[in-house]
Image (cartoon, rainbow, N blue to C red; front, side, top):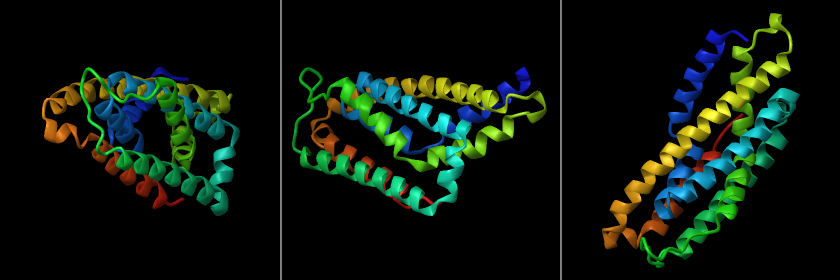
Length: 207
């Protein structure tokens, strides 16, 4: 692949990753309500989930999902239901206090798994790669599948870097919030609202 093509794709990938979306909000929610390590663990999970979508795009499975309204709807509503379940858990814990010294921090492995599951259950991600990757592929160079795989890996790496930066930034914001008890006591509520918003966003998405 031409270096100029990779550079153009990287620029597009960075812009798209920076745009507000379910993944960004999910990482921010974990980082603010827990800590930056929680956000990074979630980021690793989300990017691991990207491997599934990249593979689906390369193998043409994404095209099948796009063509089947039933499959798309099943995956979409399963993802929305999962996010709303997480929101319900957060609302139930709305009275739990948060402090820097003693936090109700979930195991990072659990957060990693949540990131994977959330990404896999968002069919829009597969359709996103199905629409984006072919635009930067040069069929005359051959090995179309390999070209798409390389582009997918480039997207994954930059996403992981940016999500990690989001986590670090949100972690600093959390320290400011923790110093304000009135806000700190509502962190679970804030997280629940974010999860509800993400779940509704996925549920209302169209092919």
